[in-house]
Length: 121
Image (cartoon, rainbow, N blue to C red; front, side):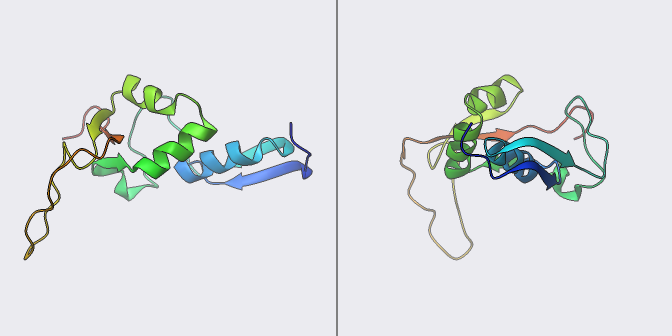
């Protein structure tokens, strides 16, 4: 453990940012408590406190790299949980009204899109 900053850290919110924050400070505190207003489901499920959970999510390369630093094997865990891997700028076409489509070329970066929990269309 690195030189401790204190005995106890409290992180509010158990979304992706809260969980990553708790992991990031865990090396500098003896104990970390994570507070969240909802009961967290044990399986992939929609949560009433996150209205944006009903649309497709994708993780950007920089975020994936940061989460891999905090949680080694994070990308492999996403894939094992059903996330769909894709090649950035090759498997997805970016278009904007009034502009020609961006040229597709392989940037050499892998990322993941999240599938929705069962029972939702």
